[in-house]
Image 1 (cartoon, helix red, strand yellow):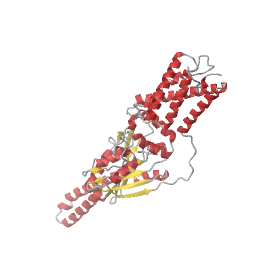
Image 2 (tube, rainbow, N blue to C red):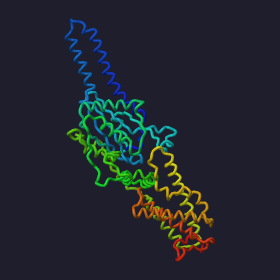
Image 3 (cartoon, one colour):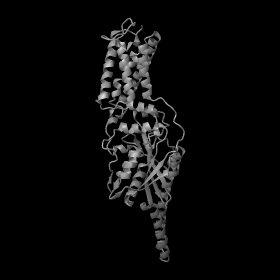
Image 4 (cartoon, rainbow, N blue to C red):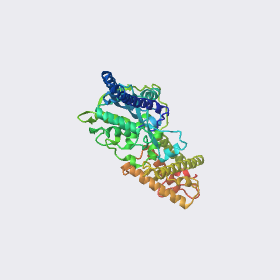
Amino acid sequence: MHTILKSPRKRLTIADKQIRDTHQSVLFNAQMLRILQKTWCMNRVRPALCLLAFFFLNVQGYSQTDSCSIKISLLTCGPGEDLYSIFGHTAIRIKDRNSGMDVVYNYGTFDDSDPYFYYKFTRGIMRYSLSVESFTDFMQEYIDEHRSVTEQTLSLSCGDKQKLIDVLRQNALEYNRYYNYHFYLDNCTTRAKNIIANNSDSLIIFRNILPAIHPSFRQLINGYLDKSGKYWDEFGINIFLGNHLDEPATNEQSMFLPDYLLKGFDSAVYGHRPLVNAKREILAASVNNQPAKPQIRPLDFFGAWFLLVIILGWIRKPWSVTTLRVLDFIFFLSIGFLGIIMLCLWLGRVDAVCRNNLNLLWALPTHCAIAFFMKRQRSWVRNYFRINALISIILMLGVIWRWWSQEIIPPVSFILLIIILRSLSIVYRNKDGKKITIPGRKSLLQGSGQR
């Protein structure tokens, strides 16, 4: 799944020229045949020469379109270091040993020069396209980025090869090449899979490649984010995407990821034979021997924040009280801002990937406003945080007992604990702000008042 593939426009002309030359050659042969029919073939003196030329041009024309001389293969590209490339990529290679044509059909191209690109990206309006480039140019990008490329040669019949080539060429026309990209339902990998499976006269059967308990889309995606070490990107993706991502993926749905499509093709049956008759690694990924840079993970960050507010609340010195109030302001303002983004994505996107987001219950957009009133000892402020604590307690119990249809990632558990701790501290703070007690016992939440 090549989420963002920056393919220069100049690449579109190389393979198009090869295809155009092939068509021009066939048209030239047809014109020559018509000329022969009108001149040499009408002259009874040279019938043998006419037949010889006619046979030669027909053989040459046939060699340009002979689908059995063509090799069609699936290219699976390994993950890169950038966020857009960590899921890998898929493309289709077509190589004709007679004409010398060697091109790659790539459904992962888009134009990032659009001034409204990021606005459209946020709203889920992403126009991707099918581009055609030479195999050499396609490979150069992966050589430069030290990424692996694996080729699976498909055992398609001659008729299915020609049918697939015709459909790809038709798809590559300017008025056909664009499509609306969807993160896990319609991307460059699913397009490659579907165009091969849907244009075969013989049924392609994909055998199961998933464990008995099918993983959710979220779990499949998180596997790549964990391996890449992009923990903060993983945190952002998980809190902004809704519970649609927690639906179990079917066997074929899991093939929206390039590695899973590669496994699917390896196990697939085409007619009465394997779909893949040869597999080889064209390019091996370079091994990075540099030690990984140390980084603070979201789980470490929010865990440390939780411990910090406990310690400051226990100390109950004037400086600790002031520090807690500053931290409370930053904390609730920040998660309120996150809630505004979640709400905008829920309402503003044209697709459903950000809807039904349970995280919006702890990241209330109203936190942005209440952060400026926490110092005031108003009853409505106390009631607000009383309700806020109750919601967070219910959410936390749901995480422990697995009530929710949406997976709550571990860093959010610490966020919920911080919300509960600080909300109760504000609720049970006395009006004079000098002492904090929870009825019936001393509280560990005493950091919001003064001693």
